[in-house]
Length: 77
Image 1: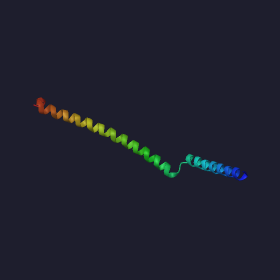
Image 2: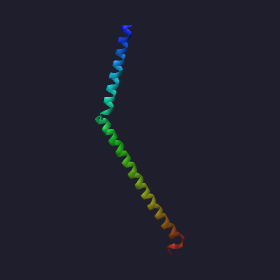
Image 3: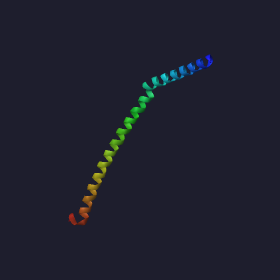
Image 4: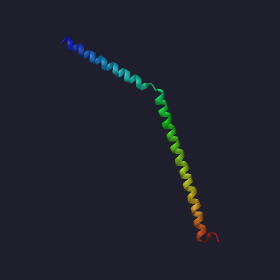
């Protein structure tokens, strides 16, 4: 029985050490993690800017189309 208790204690110690190591790694941000976060932020900002530009372009095209339609229906004579 002494061997079983020692074995259990060893397993528990290994598990505790592994969990401590993993939690310590999770708290630190390495250079790749920082770079990844920066890329995520840049991608989000780019997507937002492209969306705004597309909306403005769509509105301008709509106005141009309306003016053309007005002129072709007799408003431009």
